[in-house]
Length: 269
Image 1 (tube, rainbow, N blue to C red):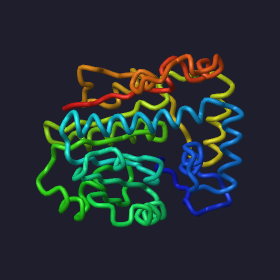
Image 2 (cartoon, one colour):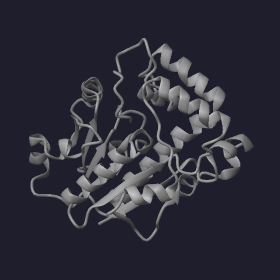
Image 3 (cartoon, rainbow, N blue to C red):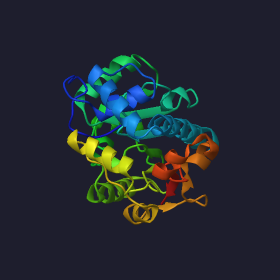
């Protein structure tokens, strides 16, 4: 789910997206990714739980946005491969799901996976510049004049710089209709920045060419303006899905904190 510059078919170096797939239990990964994932698990055993928790929360928001809030169109940025129960597995029949990813090889692979799945689309676009996707002629044709849609940035925020995130937020705000909703994952908020495990993981991703940006929740709030949270505010990922804190070890809590390494929030105009 990252907009990094690695290619999904490069089997010589680990890929953040393929590591994520492996931790989810998928099979779209190479031995180099599995080795890197095992190193990650050795340093941070909760990582496997974390990626599954993020995916469960993604499914939760798919239900919330469609069944509860009534949106019939979801636009997802930095989607990665549409495997392991992604959004379109959860939404009601007839819901339009527009996926996107930075890597053109991921896009082609994703289209093969989706095949002729009705009302599900996959396009090449960079989450740093959401107007690339929103302005594509194919997307314009799909949406028509509709601007009141559900937008999703989930599991991507740590891969975006402050400048990238602030710019994307404003671009989405300028485009979206007044009744739109942006489901956002404040990824990494609450983790221990100084814990040896955290520092090792940050170094690992930096060496992969995919640096991670660690922020506090308050920093996210500033970067996401002029959007504002709905009445539920920022919800810890543990509370979002109902993941019991006693399922975390003391070491898990020392690294990822009581939030489950982040928050989810529904942002409004």
